Image 1 (spheres, rainbow over the protein chains, first blue to last red):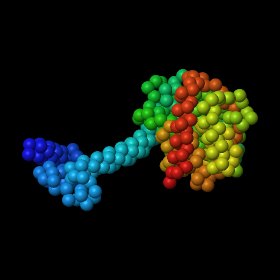
Image 2: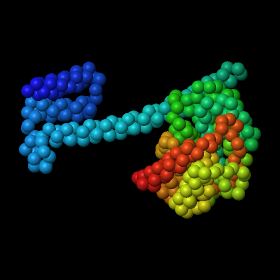
Image 3: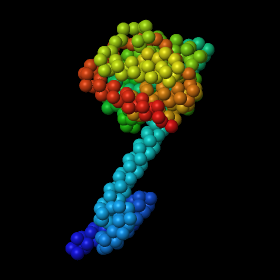
Image 4: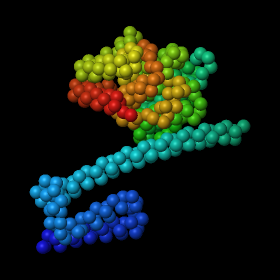
Amino acid sequence: MKLNILTVVVGVLLLAVILELLRRRQLREKYAVLWIIVGLGVIPLAIFPRGLDKVAQLMGVASGVSLVLFLGVIVLLLICTHLSWEVSQLEEETRALAEEVALIRTRLAELDSRELSNDQR
Amino acid sequence: MTSGKRVLIIIPAFNEGESIAKTIAEVRAELPAVDVLVVDDGSSDDTIPTARAAGAIVAPLPYNLGVGGARRLGYLYALRHDYDVAVQFDADGQHDPRYVPEMVDALGEADLIIGARFAGEGEYHARGPRWWAMRMLSMVLSWICRAKLTDTTSGFRACGRPLIEGYARWYPVEYLGDTIDTTVWAARRGYKIRQVPVAMRARMGGVPSHSPIKATVYLFRAMVTLLLALVRR
């Protein structure tokens, strides 16, 4: 029973942190939704660890707990892949921005030197 | 240069303060009619003022993107300023500007011209795994491009409008992507690729690596890059 209390507390804390981050606009909704779904799924399982035993048996997995563990690893892997993808997108976006900044600085230097030569005239 | 084409020489530079002035001066002396763009890749030395003083247009990137990133900016500049031909050039003095007119002329019958070593001109030699990597790359790429290519990792290249447009949008930042990937990309889109034999000189600064471990890693990375380039959508 003690373990149940621990897992429930952890699950609720996780949800609270996400909601607080959302409230402070520190987390984009698209990521928050994902974690809220994960949190809401985990809390009932923390209270009833045997809840998935039937499903596990249907799938040929010995116990519901190992099924949760397996699914948990899969979900984490998917989220990691998704984050790597997001980072790649972000790098591509910052790269495009860096290019534009460089082009603007080039143009600015050109205009500056033109102004200088006009002043000297 | 023949037929009044507007030609831009793109030189990516990362902390090349020592050699950049000499390279620019040589290009401008040899080819007075072309514009020289130095893409500064976030250098921490005096590359920007040196290049500007030597008479080049300087596009300073806010942070280091790698040579592929610098080259894509060069192509973007060429596209926005309506250049007909863009020539990729190295800052370290390896490339000889005397070959540029020949490469630009060769664009009449191809879309991408690679200035190639091992094609009869010059004395450059490589050995061991590095040589195998270069052999393997040139065999596979010659087959893909349906043309004899002896030096596919050469950064000395010239291309016309269609490829300037393509490379301004798409040019990989990954290691070796700037040579292998861009060649395969052009070939798979039906662009004609040819080579012009050139001699390359020893670099003015820096030492080429001869470590066999590095060369083996190079071979491995070249194969990975090539395989990825071949299966890319």
